[in-house]
Amino acid sequence: MVGELLYAFRIMRLPLLDAGGQAIGKINDIIVVAGRGTEAPQVLGFVATSQRRRIFVSATRVGTLDNSGARLKSWDINLTPFRTRAGEQLLGKDILDKRLGDEIVSDIALVHKTGKSSTWQITKVRLSKRGLLNTRSGHRLVDWQEIAHMFAPKTAIAAEAARLRDMHASDVATIIRALPPEQRRQLADAMDDERLADVLEELPEDEQLRLIEGLDMERLNSVFDEMEYDDLADLLGQMGVDQRTKVLDAMDDEDAETMRQLLSYPTGSAGAMMTPDIIVLGPDSTVADALALIRDPERLVSIAAQVFIAHAPHYPPTGTYIGVVNFQRLLRERPSMTLRHCVENEPTIDPLLAEREVAERLASYNMLTVGVCDANGRLLGAVTVDDVLDNALPADWRRKILPRDQTNHEITENINNGFVRDLNGGRNEAP
Image 1: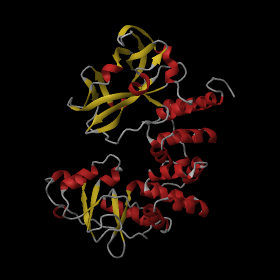
Image 2: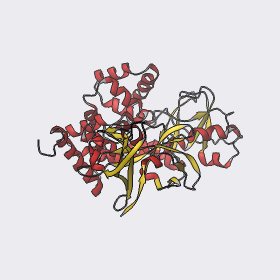
Image 3: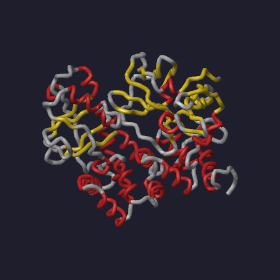
Image 4: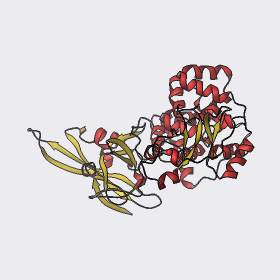
């Protein structure tokens, strides 16, 4: 089904509304990606300003878009600063007011299409002529195909990478594993550093190495900066000594020292599985301080489920470990309460504890995360339940391509077809 037309010029002045209809920001621009074949360009999401930040709001998270505003389906919002990715365009910045002969693109009409997938697509374009005194003296409404060249991506692969923005990293990894090696590398090149890091974490280590093969050291470092410490340690552990040394030498001193420490623990031990990237506060910090940290959308759910309490310093290895405060307890206490009054004394583990015993400890105490302490009682990091599951499953579990739905199959085919078009300079024919 096709809805009524909505014009970009109007949308880019609408408020961003939460699920209850309250304004929490303002729409600034509309992010689009070129359609496949003869399909119209598709809206990926919106750039909005909220709490003084420019953020990305996925189109899939918008429940309604009308003259009252863009209303979200749920209450949560990701405040990570917006960054343009390869294959994407901003209607306001890149398309509107651009000249086409003696006309300019003065507005663009979107239509909401429902069906197997709900999406907004570009359907009409308003072209205007300016008079001698720089006023608009006339306009015409044309089909989007009249300015189709303005939406053409540099490569079809870049456009496909942009369409994967909102897919779960494990689904993207499944798609990548179904591609031939050359298409894998091209798709990796088209991804931004954060996205590529997320996908690498969902692949077996040997396939990670093949995917990053050929990337220069600057790009590698940028991608590795976005990876979780424990996942990066697993990847570095699979590298040859010379390559690993080059990577560590290129890192900043603090990160390199952290990685060397993680790599020093025996395979299959708690130390080899742990991450030092945890939330640690002192006993005099408040509940409000803790809640502010666990709200960070960049933190893993398992890490944000609790705050560890220790004496200074508050980055591993910490001062003497005191205990932990789980997020449910934080929600029950007043914001001004100090953490020393709600700390719980949950058990910790030694970094040399075998992974089987780590799993038993988590299961016995119903914990999502268990702290790892040295012999002096200093907190070194934590092991999360997802890492325990990863190690408990058969070594080749990531190689088993999960059953893919029709959408994933279509995406894989489209990437392959896009690769062919890129080889042929945009012509859709066999190379």
